[in-house]
Image (tube, rainbow, N blue to C red; front, side, top):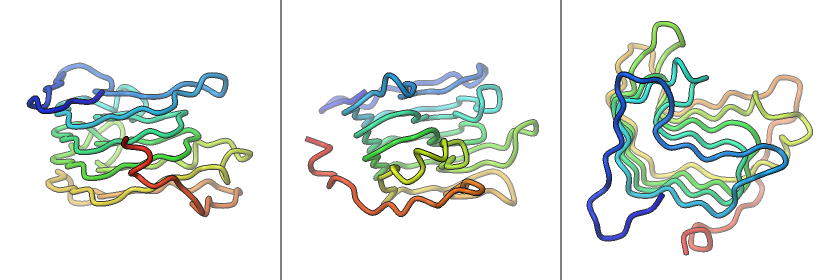
Length: 168
């Protein structure tokens, strides 16, 4: 989803469960070369949809999440899980991530490495940079959370493609 010189579209669904924008496949079908840019995503409830929230990224390669405004979503602003490679999450604003009493404390950006199969953990590459996270409504809210795998080596993030290559 990308926009050029137009105002960002507003995606809102405060009462319903689910995810505002989602990109993902499975081990046999992996989306590649996706740009999610300059959107407004508001009011999605991750608690009823396995923690996805405003923007969710799953099995994927070369996904760029850039310049989005994620507001008033429950549990996770941006949720990343399952194997991914060459992921760039940059220049987004996540505001007012809300607590869900049934699902846990709010997180601006959450990376679920604990959900990645052990054989895929060392192949994960990407970066999260220059994001603004503010206004989470919970005394113990978290800006960026990395759920590390248990019993597996943590990924080193040794290499990635420069954003200029991914954003063209």
